[in-house]
Amino acid sequence: MLKAAIVLLLVATLVSLFSGLFFLVKDEGRTSRVVTALFVRVSLTALTVALIAWGFHSGQLQPGFGP
Image (spheres, rainbow, N blue to C red):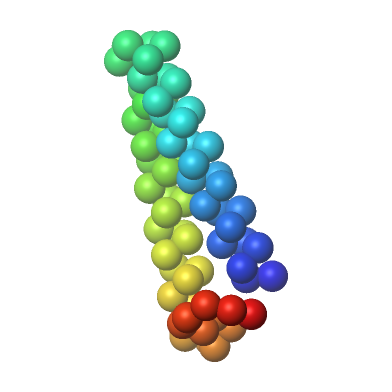
């Protein structure tokens, strides 16, 4: 369950990244949508890092590869 949440957050971060790029090109800096997309992306990344740290701390995630 934790791994699925982390993957979902990473996908959401990528969507936010590309939406920010789209707003940057389309709006040419005239609106604050790029700043909002940046805030969302940073928040999602912080939450992802926190989930990964919690997963290692609780033992749900193990370092290395494999199941």
